[in-house]
Image (tube, rainbow, N blue to C red; front, side, top):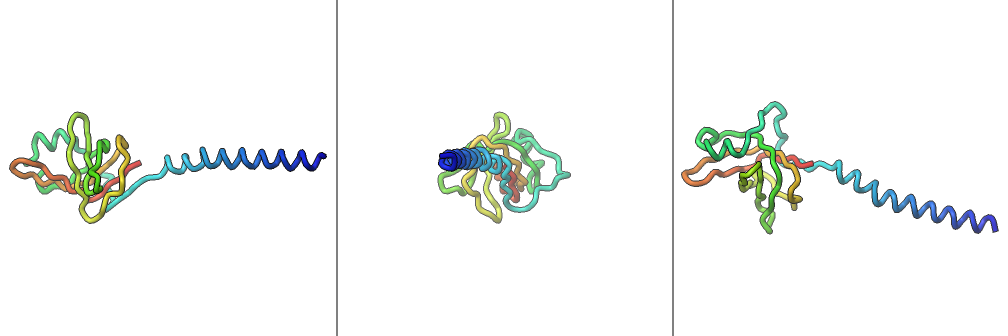
Length: 131
């Protein structure tokens, strides 16, 4: 009878440990996972607010900048995403890579080229980092 009790007790311990690993172990690694796309984002570049670019787009025309904000949405075909910094939102297009499905309201850092037109400002992402 002792061996039967020992086997069932070991089975319970195994299932509890397996459940704990699947529940917590996989979530910990997923939480630490970082998405990086395109070129590396320069660490020494100052972060520019989206509001500054929108208010004075001619000053940023043709320049590459770093911006931090949130993913506020993405088109259904994953060809672009919507970047939010404070009250302002901009559409970000990839340059040289494709966007995967991005999680909404996740913090994102982008290294982007700004092209200022007569009516619109276009942001072409050269690099992206999401935690």
